[in-house]
Image (tube, rainbow, N blue to C red; front, side):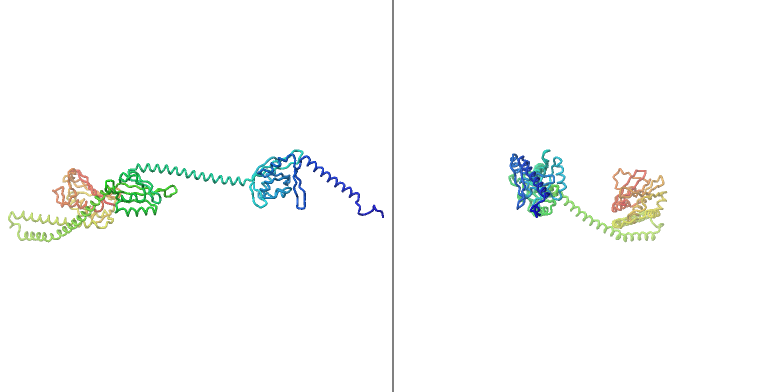
Length: 569
């Protein structure tokens, strides 16, 4: 077999393919050399045993490259597929990654997952022209670092375009912003505090001016009770030298020793519970006399309710204190006099009771003797001078008996004032009185008109109410005018708030009220031509007053009278 038929020799097709591959490698080498010569590239990535190695080339733009390397901002160039074509040392430092590991790798590994959509939008806007934004980048150590990004397209029509990215670390700027915000907040707080101090100073000056103008001793203390201010009225009143500093205990020596313990105790309690107090004490004056003062201490609080200071005043009340003492002495005298009058009234009641009972037996005996004498001495056998004497003796006995009865009624009146008040039907009571007075009404040719629809019941002891109605109607018919029939009207209705008015109107003789006549005095009689005891109106007045009411009268001489009794509802 011939040598040219050796199976290990390359075939023509293989030789042609190897020749084409060599031609392609030569073309690429020539393009690389051309790019190096024209400065189109500034670095080479060469694969070595330890991985890819980056070799930078110096050229005419070396000064610009040095400037970018020394920038404080991160810079990189990205291909359309986000491959890092160039990265400066500042950006590598920000991302905590070795510079050689970044060249030729995708920049997407440094974009956090939550910000990838935002990153793609920035890149798309950057390829379209320019874009800016802020976002965190993920360092090789896994930390997030906030940066401000500026993206811009570089390259001419003859060159392949690249995306230039400038990354500025804003973490320091944010720290400065936080510090600046804190400083501004602190300055604002200081300004607010200074403003409050100025306001407090103005308020203190205004308060001092006001307190100096108050015509009383005025002082202030801090929340703990330590003295802070004392106006000039203290020094004017006590004569204490103004040079003496207002300090704890500086004024205590002017307080009366008997009043000092209670004043201090009250002051301690006020400080403990934060409540104002009032004290009465005696303070020594410059003339060496103690005068009574009314001390008022009040807490002063701010808008938040916090205690700011105590404000106290001393007001001279010496004259009022003495007047009150005199009033108390007078009251004590009145109490003593009232007690004495009560004893006297009790004695009078006992006397009336005793007289009305003890005198009944003698007068009854005298009346029996007169009756016996009349029986033993017939009228035809009596001398002419004896008959008038016997009549006068009988009249005296009758008057004496009426007097005893009146005394008995007066004695009962005081006791009846304590009877319980109950609702009393007025109509049957008036009818009962009318029946009792029927002979008198007939004698006066009288008529009684009753109008009590507005108050059918009256709250009073029935016995007392009957006495009022009986005495008023009895007088109305008793003192009728002889020239005309008696016409009497009894009306009851509401009066002033809380009262009813029981009113009796007659057309009788009337009274001359212009004269000083004691209408309601015991045993006082204004018309002597009619028989009477003179205690009826007295009893009406006493019953009304004991019930909390009163009696009023209107009258015209010769025309008639109106008696009105006001009783509580």
